[in-house]
Length: 201
Image (cartoon, rainbow, N blue to C red; front, side):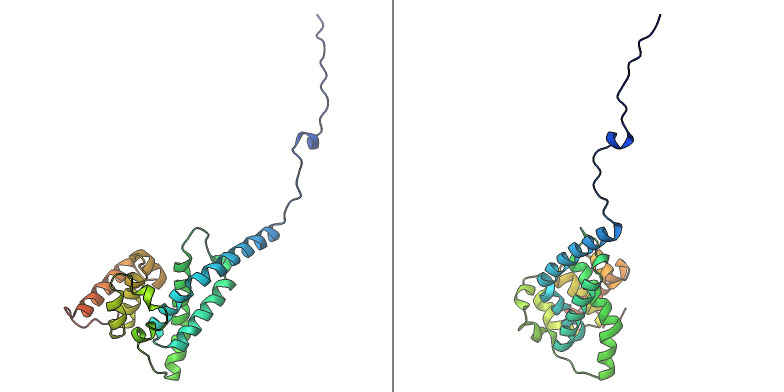
């Protein structure tokens, strides 16, 4: 018995595939992502400028240094836009950048120049303190923050004024979460006058 052969049209590999769109070079994709990320960061910077300035003032006690910190933070954030992870908190990333700049550059310059101080609480009343004072303990923090050692002062500001979690504060300051809790406990004791003078940790 003969079996009839059924012939099928011959399809080339190319005709069986979906139409192929021109491949986008990897470098071009990375460039597009960087542009999108930079645009997001520019928008986020505008929303966080006041908060960054307040943090800069709490760190430095000086208006001009706070201005320098914010300017340097904005520049570095834009330069390193590709390092920002979409979906994470931009404010935390910006605070980390500002803190790093303070530690590595601005504070050393201020110490060398022997510049004076201003009262951060007084300065903030003229520069956007109204929103800050709506946070829990903000009024007390702004009045007494200058009496705290820097290590405690930064932890108190980030946790109680900016409302960041202990874990977020630890990430910004690059210290263990237990150290954050210890600094906050020492600061609370000092602010309430119920504990011994807290030293730097």
